[in-house]
Image 1 (cartoon, one colour):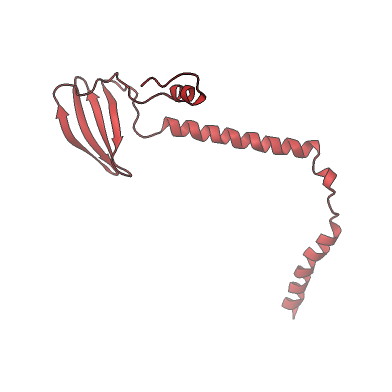
Image 2: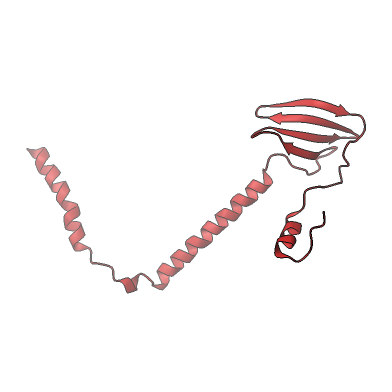
Length: 139
């Protein structure tokens, strides 16, 4: 009996609390504090998006930056998670297969097959200029 009485008392508390809360008028929604909160939330979301994009760019798997005497000359995806990568190690170029959990040497070239300085991937600024119609594609 006490259990039912306690359960009934707990069920009536939200009903009493709802009656005590006055209705919010539509004009009070667009106050300066509310707009500041919305704009602040928007700025936080944009900053988080920029932060994630910077992290993705920094840790984007295979990088073509120089690291000592070894660099990635070229890379091609051959499957969903597999890549073939041409590495320049000193004067020698090595073709390796990269998959989940393993890296295997496919072939070692005595003479360079591809010049390391020749970049076939256009930069973002080149693509942006072509998209905006400011210059022709320089293939």
